[in-house]
Image 1 (cartoon, one colour):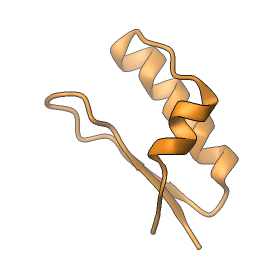
Image 2 (image 1 turned 45 degrees about the vertical axis):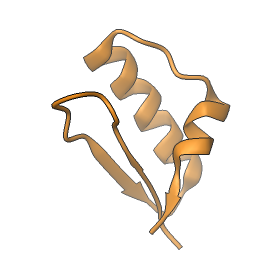
Image 3 (image 1 turned 60 degrees about the vertical axis):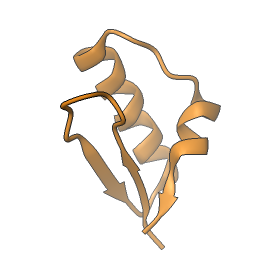
Length: 52
């Protein structure tokens, strides 16, 4: 089953989907840091992941 995360920042259409939850977490953390200048805790990302 795939794991999916969509960015909730205004006017951002970032979405990632992968079978590996750790890959999704890494990509979301990188996106948050590079595009929004913020850091996301691993647990926060896990709480936002949806099963796709």
